[in-house]
Image 1: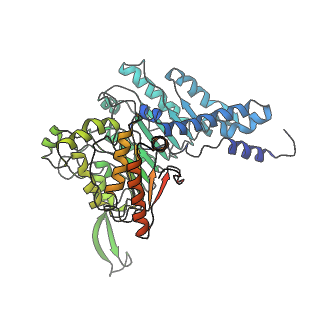
Image 2: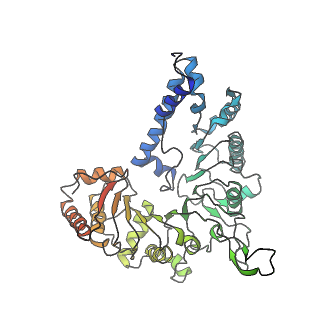
Image 3: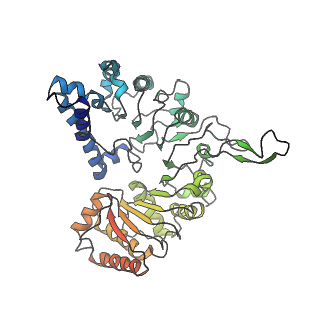
Length: 476
């Protein structure tokens, strides 16, 4: 290494050479780990992360000097991909490596993606969760945590085995992403009070993808339901909303206790007490990825054919500027389309009027469906929406699905979104498929071209871009 180059410059060069822009904020659009790994766009992000990690290790092997310089960035992003190595990883994080600091002190992101293939006994699972608890306690600067849940056990057991294994995560945590291994109903769910305690203990959270929750002994059905959170999550800007329509209201999103307000100086005789106001526990929430729930005929009977409005929309909808509506591909095929074959009033579609009613400041709308052939629906009038994001949530090629997507754009959008300025095809794979089968989609693309001209005539213009914001050349 040339002596004329300061160590700080080399560290900066190495950091730029291994930069991964998206590694701190995993996507909220995938609910199961399997789907995250098989999505082309997400896999490209994983490839970037894997490539960055590999490059760091290659740099570290060049010389002793470079090994020492690269230490601060070598362990920033680590992955646990096999539970058999959990104990070794815990020991490794305790080892001092640079400037008297342990490896664990350099970690900013941890991905726990190991699959639990061997540990079916509850005691074995609890032992693994305790190991994760130990690992997290060694990472004081952790900012992003991705956890793949592949444990099949009754989550209520977690109430008996304190502390909750995620509770030892660093208070500096900014992003928590909980991914389920599969939709199996036996997959571990988290008691709601434990999850609320975790949120209360981590004040810096900005992005939340929660687990599926189970109700414990929280007093929600006796009198007025009480909020689960004890303090405001002032830094939360985006989260994923899981809705259980048969368990409403959702206490995680209820406003906090009343706060007394006065006018004038507090000690002044002229000060007046104002009506108390509920504390806003999510004052800066702006984006929600809304996972549409699976709703069947029996569910609708139990609900009296009326879906309750999600608690989040009731109390926080007025602040939202962006909503991504995500139908899991299995839901889209098994429920969404079949309901539409019987009636235009699919239960899933009842959420769109709720969004229009409770989210008056909405500027971005995402429609992440399977777009199965024959699917037909309208979205309500949303006068403030300027950006529409669209993608398919399945990897199977279906030209008929792209016909459905493009026809929806060409026929049903202009009346509902009068101020639309930009249509984003959010998936790289969708863009490639539309280009590849352009000849088979020429009728739909001609209609889309007519739509852009209509918006141009109205004076606003309509841009078609990909997920990176690049104009879609050669589509129309």
